[in-house]
Length: 218
Image (cartoon, rainbow, N blue to C red; front, top):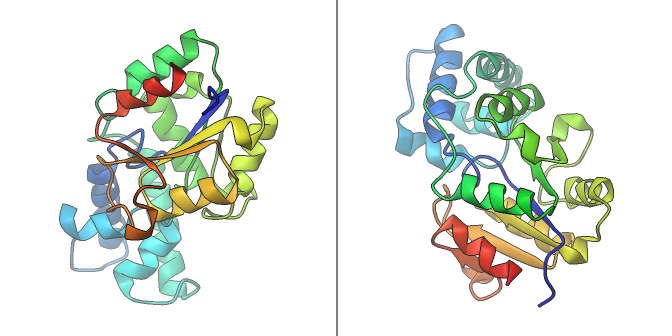
């Protein structure tokens, strides 16, 4: 395999353990709208990865375009902007990898389903913004993963081909986006929130420790 010229990362479940914040902000949003139930961490986990609107739809059991779904989605996004990282932080090994890639002059980007204004606040709060050439959410005008659009745009900005870029994520959406963009390598983080779909066994690089990414540079 050729040496990677760039890396693209998912955010929640990949760079950042955001589950406690997603749970807290979902519960805050539910309470603000008058709902009388809360989610546990385990109940929240299956809803992570498909975007905040899908989360709202799943939590309420209503269609994506239902007015109640949209109300919860907007409340969640607004509250997340105020509470971007009360509980979460980078996973072990993440900062070591980012520091190493930055020192080697290898560009990095982030593509996430998190609402754009929440993404900005999280990256800023956790000191990750300066590492990234670009960070994108669907609200920036791109199709959601598994569409390759955000990955292709990141590579355009970084000045590299997708065929020279590694995609790193923790969900089916991330993996499929990496393959759809024809990335050099697709990596799956075992510390994330979704199990690796069976059909991708043997087709992706499993990361039991995030620092294993650095072996791709050797």
